[in-house]
Length: 460
Image (cartoon, rainbow, N blue to C red):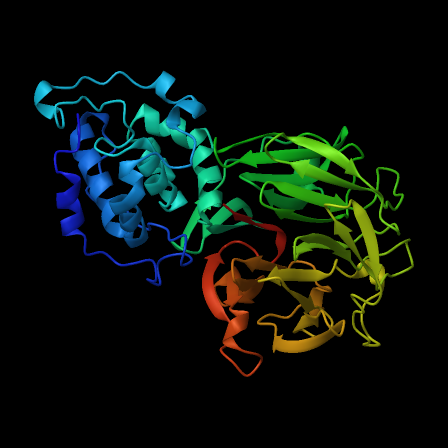
């Protein structure tokens, strides 16, 4: 069982778009965005599937073709071989006919017959990840490859990253939205108890995991959705469980800082989570305790800003954590907030709504319904745009303000003539300031309610 068309013939047929097509993601890590409609999920159609899959993948990726013409086919690349992730040892038994041999050699052990495995892995890593379920249905070997998580590690190494938005709103369970394919996907129901379902929750996406923090009858709990397996399981608890903390992720690590413990004490401790190991590591304490704060990564460092050091004292300073030196540095007036006299008391306001795009910090100021940008050199905030929705009506709660690749994302609800809907707005900061392009409506979700309870963006 092999690809019946020589690779050179496939190269000659290629006329597809290059990586600069609007449908692709990033210049150096373009994503193959669509499978042919004739792609069969029937295991009995292996030969046709192999041909359609290989031709489509090669045809769609101009940058990869250049690699295939060069070193990829002539010698092994730096990537680990398929043997190292244990897939060749679990290869399915496939009957082949002598007439299906290519150049007189059997190739049923190959991922894509006719290609070196390293080249095939490189191709598959560039496929749109919303199509991975289709790939998994091609063969048992493909299924093992995808659930192993190796393709996601390879994607990160190649700079191929797609950002999906995970939402939990008042009238709908957890759903994922793929901006590239404009697809909504409902997640399985979380098998938590009723207390966790109705309690306040916080969420964080790290690696290929979605972590949801909340309370069950027995105390703090973490439920984890695994993108590889497509199901929920209990996550490892922190060394010091907490709520109302600041958090952010970078790749396969995340940091949580501050918050409140089960007795309501405000914390200054911090912990680092590794999605690869599934473990929590205690970090050095911050200079000040704080809850209702926000965290983010910028310029390779973790920051936490805003929040309250007690039930009445509001903080305007921030703190910077250097992962290499394991030290915290206090930054005065990093989040001054609003001076409006009629704003809500600090305890009623949401944590700071902040997002980082291209290492630039932005904030959605709920009291004035403005987007501000942080000037690192002068340590000041400047207005760059109006928010597309009102945030002051609910003191910032029920609104999501996130970075989604190189765009800012504002997700909020409104009530219209046809009921309540959730609207996803996006804006590219490089397009200009408040006088530039308006917010783009990415998608709307009807019958979802008008309140965003939790939101996380997963990039992998």
